Length: 101
Image: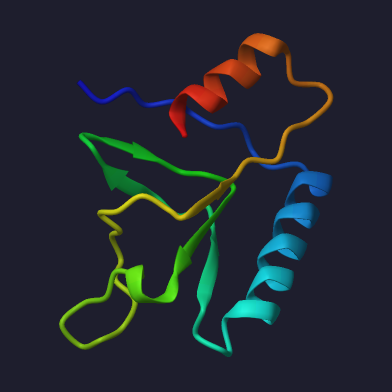
């Protein structure tokens, strides 16, 4: 059974941090084809799906379609998973997040 958690709308600070992380990581690793960061990418593996704030895949592990373009569905776990926590999040909410990554 796959559990699904509805995530709340992103707030401005959260969105800003997420965008800066993706931009900064990609500025360092993307042009050299080392890795690539993706925001809010659904990754399905081991019978479940997760949507981390930022997923980073080593270049060779990026799922591609038959045309060699980045696929719409990733059936692999990220090499890095980044979750941005808010001070307002309760400990149970934080545990729920980490139980899904």
